Image 1 (spheres, helix red, strand yellow):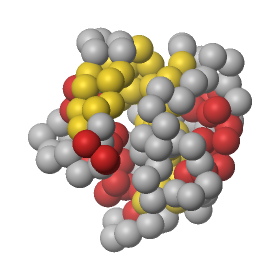
Image 2 (cartoon, helix red, strand yellow):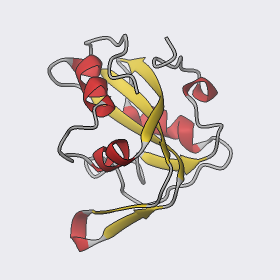
Image 3 (cartoon, helix red, strand yellow):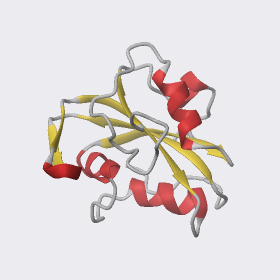
Length: 143
């Protein structure tokens, strides 16, 4: 798996397309357990801190990291197959677009959006259509 991509160090939003080959369970807030079956997932996140999109996406591409965010469990267990970048964009706008794709479902309410009062989640489950080009983004991993 690639661990570096050409990505701006500016703030913005990103889309990670993650394939899980096996079931995954991990703890979430309130003592609950998230259970995800094998399949394709799309996670929408934002990077507003030091290093911007470049630093955040590079972190997600690494497997040797502590699980800090919900998505870290997926990126450690699965395989990132595509990355979409929206410079100066917002993760909620990306999730709105992803949630309109055919077959999109929210596998666990609140997953990936614990800091967002607007969205039901920032992680969607779906099929092969879950690729950056489906919502008008270029796949930064393919570059």
